[in-house]
Length: 107
Image (cartoon, one colour):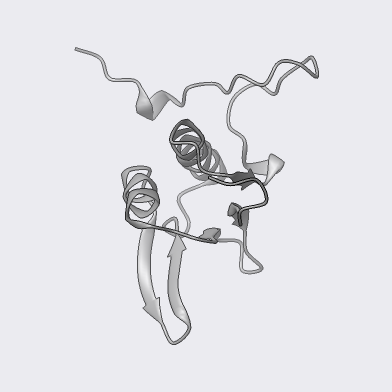
């Protein structure tokens, strides 16, 4: 991605839903789907959001998981800080995100 490229944003909408907006190419859409986001056609494009009423902890975990996957794929991203799951970084230089429990696979 080029510097100054439009960012994908994961935020809480006015109705309380968690939404993803911005340039969503097929890979970004696939990563969001993997994290539990749903896509609905609208007159102006697509509405990409998490299911309603799953609880704040679940929503934060899935929003964080989506942000982590998109960041790993090198997409420019903005995640609402209120949606970050797990412990918050304690030092300004500590930016490593926590892995959501749902992303861990036990064998």
